[in-house]
Length: 370
Image 1: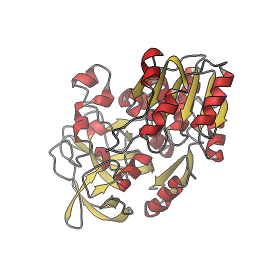
Image 2: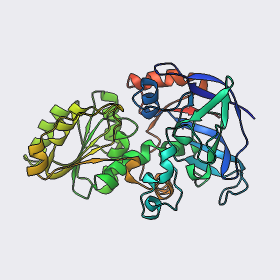
Image 3: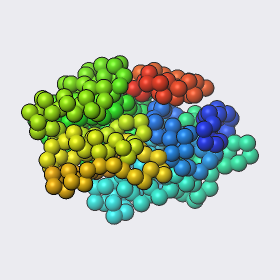
């Protein structure tokens, strides 16, 4: 069938919106009609080359859709079902899935190859060649063929433009606080970077019962959103946050700090580690360039003050459990998705949307296909 997609043909090139050819689904795959796709910073990492991927690639890994056709071996999904794309596939059978760590599913080895799980052959073609999907889902397309392991069925009562946000940013940020940092009632938490992920780390800390939540960002409008989502204090940078946290905790410092800036750099780790108390933890959720290999931190603090430095992928959660859970929290009014959606764009406006992200205008921009 014919579809339209935003394709990246090379590093530092703009997204090219063009007509594509899309195959029918294989027995273990589904054909979806995309409804909304979030403009996440991870796709910007493809443009800058920080995240290597097979090119040409159709971008987008955060989205919601409606099932239009299912393969012969697909169970549990039928045409008309509403789904959220899971950029982390989960087979349910490997060691990691069966032990409650779906984010580490063995199917993840395919994520950046551009080759579909079923048989490794591209489903989409443009300009006479195969186009790989970002994280096996390629949400920047009007239609897409994906493996059944990459979609999660949701309640059809949830608005699909809001549901798309739970595909990546919400779940990753929320889980960074709740799962990886292990925030508990009464904790003091610092979130460094307030975007699509950091804003939800704030919400996760609030829902987990944190007493003090310090949001750190240089843009005042983002700090205002953070306060609406649950931040009790704000700071413009890590160094002013240190003075603030030191004062409000009487020198004890924070229990956890979550790093969710646009690009993780080695020089940020040391100052962030200094924000937390003895025995505290720092969670690094922000993605660093593939070539980043040096980190500046105090090994004295790390060892003698028993601090921890933790990485977090998809918030350390389980897509099939956490996505429906968070949507129920939204339906009950405990999780705010409405304030996150800053602006919607057509697929043809995708480059404008990413420019708005670069200049700090959006918490989360969304491509609306309908």
